[in-house]
Image (cartoon, rainbow, N blue to C red; front, side, top):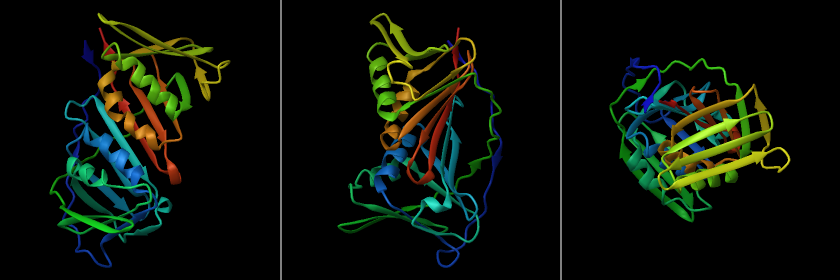
Amino acid sequence: MAHLFPQLLYAVAFGAESPLGCRGVKLVFFDARVWRYLVSAISKIIDEGVFIVSPEEGLRFRAMDPSHVILLDMRFPPDSFETFEVEEEKSVGVNFEDLAKILRRARKEDRLELEADETSFTVTLAGRGLRRFTIPVLDISAEDIPEPQLEYKAHVKVMSDIYRDTIKDVELVGDVIRFYATGDEFRVMSSSEFGEAEIIYTRESGSLLELEVEDTQQASYTLEYFSDLSGASRVADTVAIKFSSDMPVQVDHELPQGAYFGFLVAPRVE
């Protein structure tokens, strides 16, 4: 088996940032648990990465895994934050494993406060008291990744809990996930020497929120990526799956406050 994906290796370096103050970064988000699940998922794919924060676009993060099989994309527009203070575009390099450890301490009632300067990234969990953690800003560059130009022939949308259960079901038997869609149904399958799993969703059952398909579309992908990132669906209302036969799949998560998390995975082919 092999993966198909264009090798996107355009690197761009960001200069040193201004000291924290009127030109620093300060963000406040209403629910720290949203970030907890997103960062935990990302940390399973990417060790280090760069948040880009700008007055126009808010906070965004895009990166590929070292093997260039999966592309991650996270966006929080400025108005998704209770407080959004940044005067010019900033880049903040972070270790996602360290950040995930901190965010695992987030409680149900905690707000998240993020502050950054040229050397430090401060995370505050504000609920019953303030718990403040500071980690170093990493001197790393962000990849300049062009927006993929793909046309998808199958568009499927389901509730996030249904998506998460589907991933758990196919994990029982195999390490490859296969999507199959027609105008009437959407199937998710996996098989191995240990057995087979097939989950069938139809319009009549009410399990599909949306289904738009041209002809019949089917493709296979490495299940591990979906398993690693399934935690992000815990803070999403819906999950959309877009693919075409033997082409990359895009999985979109609709998050609170107009935020977005998605990923693109290269197909597996014989």
